[in-house]
Image 1 (cartoon, helix red, strand yellow):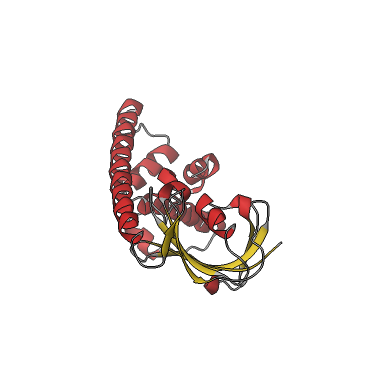
Image 2 (cartoon, one colour):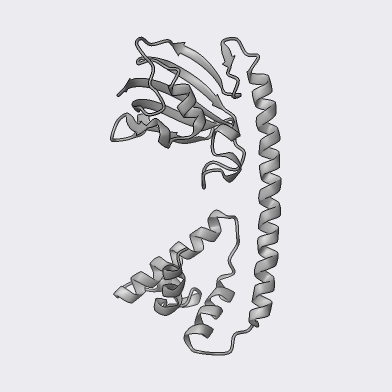
Length: 226
């Protein structure tokens, strides 16, 4: 959350998160804005799997607004945050390590499937339709249809469902695995591309749908390029 949102949460919020808040009517600008800030703040923690105690959260908001002495010292709060960050880091590292190992096992098995080809970079692909003509270069702009999933089948992107139709983008602006595949494809081609994490989003992932070290699977149709 930006510094603006963090500051505004305590400056603007005027409602309790407990009891009467359940029946609260959002009938003023301050109330609606306060509710919005509360939603934005809490959902960020919920997305990370953090459970917020609304009573304690509400007490902190109330104490700050009313200028009361806080119920924890700054040193105590800093210690809690350090412990939380350590736990968060350890959990993320364990998840990243597990995903890396799972991805390697998947690719090792997948490379032996009929029709799967492997490039020196580690990129794997299967050609469903070859297409015709020349292939785009790194500096080209392409128009494609694609569906992107994780190895467990979880879909995280799909241009087929977009109201804007096929996607157009500069090849230099996308992940390396997609760029490498498309520079080998011809207009009309349809491939399934299996992208190792180092050619995808790597250890950083792409929150919230793609975790660290995830292998990606793209079904790609190259429509045209320029």
